[in-house]
Image 1 (cartoon, rainbow, N blue to C red):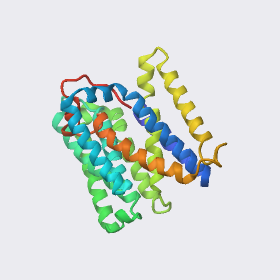
Image 2 (image 1 turned 180 degrees about the vertical axis):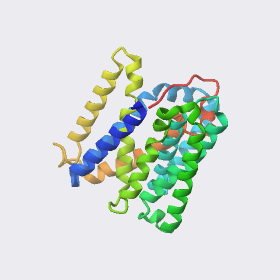
Image 3 (image 1 turned 60 degrees about the vertical axis):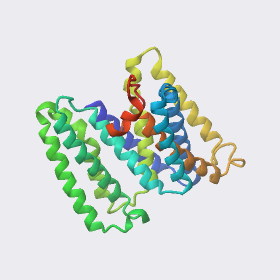
Length: 291
């Protein structure tokens, strides 16, 4: 099985395991701790790009504009469900884009557009009971979802000669899982945090292959840093040994702040966005791979 598809399957399994085996303060503490690790590792492994952007005025100015916009969204309490939705969809689609042959530019673009709308539709259908989306009729959401599923697989089929069966599986595994989740949403009420947790778990697993290729203990360092951070955040979480000193409210407020900060910074630091965004921060500079 392609490593990309296998990583997604493992991420879904771990997410379901955590969500089904924990509840209450333990669930909240573990979820927030994993979130803080995700945000911390993203900053650590993006440190070279942060310095590069800061040293180049042509990148720094748009970066400051983006950060100011993110700060305004945080202060105005803009819906995190919608803001994370944009982050999630771009990450999923532009991760898929890396798997496609560069010579098929036009077909890549067609598949990418279909994937953006399909992933947005899956996200909206799964969370249709939230107030931000409840105003949209469910019948309309499902019609849109079916249309973009058809368009996505039509576009994917056009790339079959260059992708092969293995490549098509690798490129559509999340969308296939999405269909299963949509069907299960008639029986299970999905929470935003379930999707967010999947995002954290997947992106903790995705860099493993890259660190293995780097060698020189890179994978072990990554695993050790991740494990130590999870343990530390759990120890000082509301469910940990310092539970009496650290309130749920404090961890929640920190989660909200760093979620806005992480999503906003990703527009500056991550390549998993449209070219019209990334070109503001990459011009004339080597590409650092950021998890």
